[in-house]
Figure 1 (cartoon, rainbow, N blue to C red):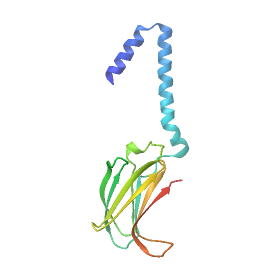
Figure 2: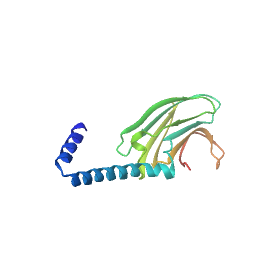
Figure 3: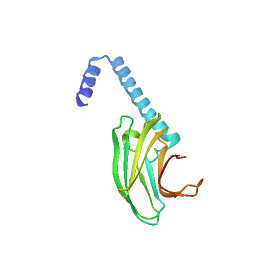
Figure 4: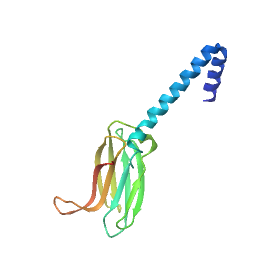
Length: 156
């Protein structure tokens, strides 16, 4: 990076006065456009949503291991959490995923208490969508308790 600025400074010094101003103006415009490209989505839509949220609906504590793989089956997240009864936990979106604007598919593998595992492929449309992981939640259609349930949730 240092070499780049040194080279740029050397080139600008060799130019005439009008050419120097033109090069500096182009650099300032380029930097301004780049800043707007990155910041405009935050102004209108806010910061990115968490990557996932885990809700423990049970009356006992649980150890939860979450593994997330991208489309190339590369591990993005591999962490273990301890959730107290009726508590929630959110995991911030990795920096590399905060700025994507296109749909991406991830595989979520959630293991509870080293016994129960649920693996689901999820398509996350943009950075304002999260994966909602629920432990021992009630299925409203059937009325039964589901040990691990995952769904996409939109943050508004």
